Length: 296
Image (cartoon, rainbow, N blue to C red; front, side, top):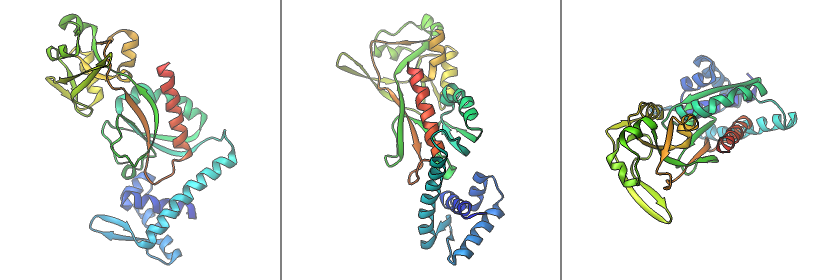
């Protein structure tokens, strides 16, 4: 294993906190990870890692090596890309996390052309509505919606979508169309427990009305929200992204159209303390372009 690979291995072990987690992310055996670290320590003549009750942690020398190794790896990637030129193909593996429904509707369809343009690139798409730890999971880029919980994260805004109240025509024919936000209290509302809930602020002509939204059905995934609404079970408050196909076909429509809700932003979030790789930046560009096309 060359020096750059050994440095990358050490960085992954420190980031994940264990040999086994690093081995899973690098798709190699744990003994190979242990051997690489041992050889690196022998060559440098210092102890880089120490075991604690919470796992592995870098020694003082290991921490200095780790910080410089991260920079060296990022600079090597950038140097290689610069040497190849702007149109160079991307290589290696890119690990991307995203919300399940959003990825199914809007991201997966972008992948064929992107992978065709970069035949040396592989993508691992980790789909979960929950916010996951980017460092622990070895994520290069996370697509997140809404407010960012970690203000220290390195993030780039890729797009924005209006929110609205949505329901099927069948449900609205049965229950009636709400004329004002307060009418939502008389309707079945499907609540997304992973997102914003409770009180919603509707605005019109400089006036703001706060409405407490409740419902008999609460769902922890966006895919479940879609299924419930499409089964004519009630209204929901969501982004236009969530029901884009059905809004186009007319199966779902927005109500209370003369009132507005806060829009929702889409962010590309990169692991803190690490330069975004060229492939992560290229993927963020791809998604940003896709979002502009969707809004057009």
